[in-house]
Length: 422
Ligand SMILES: [Zn+2]
Image (cartoon, rainbow, N blue to C red; front, side, top):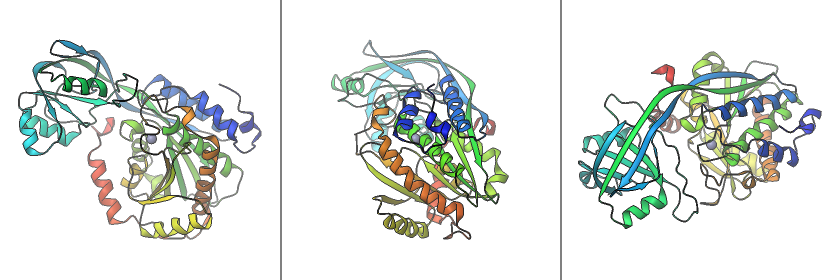
């Protein structure tokens, strides 16, 4: 680890600091792995250098060991990974491509191993079982990329009924086996399930009251990604805010939360909400940072509260002449855990143009993040956070609208239970 002299001296974060943190964390750090632990310790050490006292909280996450995962189509082996949590066993069956999931299309599933264009959640799995599918194949990646990477996918749900054997393959293999009109597929899958530990890092910057502004970002990555854009960029944003609020007086308490295991179903933020129920009652707002400062792309302020927040964000951004897309919706990120517990949330991102920086792939590297852009993004987020850290009373009602509540309830129904909820 390099010495962050800038942080040590308490000088504001600069482009060099951003670059150093991005290169120090240029490794895959999946939920529950040793690398995720290493990253949590690194982020905690940076907070200590600012003079803060981080607390690390461990929580269990499902872990899997794949003992055997093979796929052959017409006796030719295809590189695959067993989908975590899928059914173990051996199955040989005719192969069918399922381009849609409408009723007539699904009728072709009976007795087949089906190739799907999408991931499989609880509902679709149930439908595949009801239609008599024998197993399934999903794929990741892009036909035109040079890699042959196969992502580690997971069945993020529990059912009473046995799960179908399932594997994931690369998009190029999926395409070529369809072009060749593969006839018979064979899957052998054997996995062991256990638990591993993931961690949240919590940092408090006291204010004059115990009303709290909770600002979070996840630091874990998916299996193929070094997660610079998604989401070390957001973690650097939290460190920026740590410095910002550590050196300025503010009324409300600021709590910064570096979440583990977001990529496996918001497990870190959901665990936090479960363990900190009383503190959530005093939490007036959650600000979530997920994918900031990419070199190309537009800034998005995602209002997950109500129409009053749309008006506030519109005038706030206009006054500062900051170009941003305003969205009024939920987002698949840690903000949903807080919303589900009644804590209003605003999420920030800078989304790259379509296909430019494919997240959850080997192409999400430090080069995709612009330190200058990231610092510019954080300047506006800090001003927004400062407003809610100080304004007394709050400038608007933060009551969560019915539209947002319904969307969050629907989203959370599709998530797997936390380990200690099972
Ligand atoms: Zn993310």
